[in-house]
Length: 44
Image 1 (tube, helix red, strand yellow):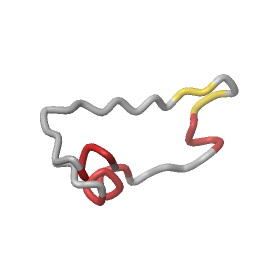
Image 2 (image 1 turned 180 degrees about the vertical axis):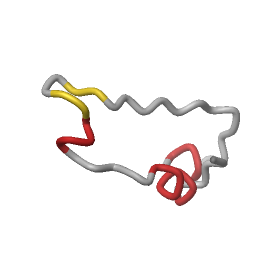
Image 3 (image 1 turned 45 degrees about the vertical axis):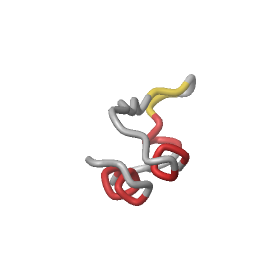
């Protein structure tokens, strides 16, 4: 949210999909990611 608010550019986002208990998708489904990043002003 801060990056979009301050109009920062040239950023790289890394999404870690592994947790100690296994893949994140088994614990919390966070897909689709692109619309979520776009909502915060990221170019996806």
